[in-house]
Image 1 (spheres, rainbow, N blue to C red):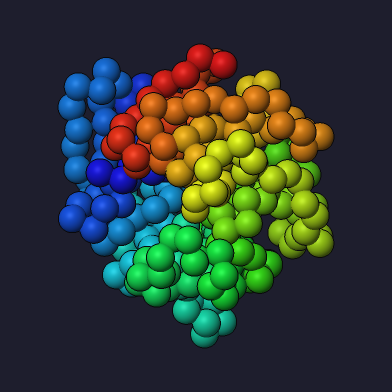
Image 2 (image 1 turned 120 degrees about the horizontal axis):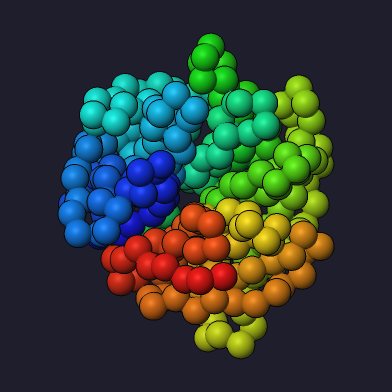
Length: 271
């Protein structure tokens, strides 16, 4: 239920999370999709990333909001829960950078405070979305950006020169120049992925990855598509999903895999 954060493993199997509070699982799915193993119940896991050593990093959005370090056997520890005395509010998604550091979005509001707001009113709620850089060797964490309207998806450009962050509440994808010291330049608007032809309901960009064609593929939750954006920031096309709640994407060669919380599925598309 409420799947997110698909990660393809070398043997063809999958890692993903089930965010629904009744589960709160980090799971492993067999390559043929026929079986599922629950590695751990953490609370409400959101984003996942795998490091070169095979460790799993989990953006845990509750109980408490934190970054978790997990082994493939399901054992885990709370790695970080704050930056310079300021607690994390809603760790959301993760991406490793060209420098080997882990970059994390924090949506910027404690989840129980946002879910009780009616969807049609959420865009007007004050939110301080953030981006952090984490050195996983030293546990040093640094705040890189803040003031984002529900920071969500995060992805590095194929050449490593820019970091992209989606903000769900305004429909935008932002681009930051990435510097070799791990800091970011000023943000600039890269694209907006809201479909003006769709009904005016709450929807917005979620997880995203660059595809093998160099385009950015962004799951647009409650819009029912993966919006494909060129390196120049132009909409290339929209890939309709089976449900209306796509949450994140990953690739295996020319195949796009999408988690969809609207129908509770992991689906495949040819690109």
